Amino acid sequence: MLNAAMIGATGEQELIVTEEHSAVRWGSGGVDVLSTPQMIALMESAAVAAVDPYLEEGWRTVGIHLDVAHLAATPMGSRVTARAELIAIEGRKLTFRVEAFDEAGKIGEGTHQRFLVDVERFMNKARERVRRA
Image (cartoon, rainbow, N blue to C red; front, side, top):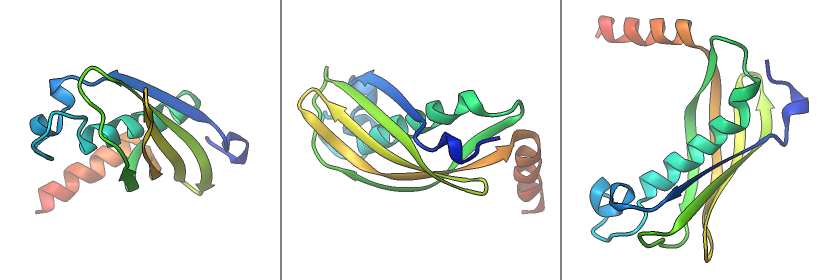
């Protein structure tokens, strides 16, 4: 499992902004630029990439909290890179510093928290919660 020695682990993800990533497509605005939901998804994916290689079989992380600012618009055709750095481990709660950049500079920043879960147990609890509803 992860320990304090993992602090500083980093992950990175990239995409080229296309129509499928746009604010128009995601209903988060009426402009053909990178949508905030897509920037956040890229940041989450970078956080997953930072720690997944170190997880034991049957364990994954799930997102539990985001505090992110979208600082600048990125037009179609631009390359966006998201980076995540593991900055804290509290039991099974992981905290990441996340940032996103395009060719012109920083477009987003914030923190993201994920929680370590045993996948089988997690899915059983999710199904049981729905069954009880």
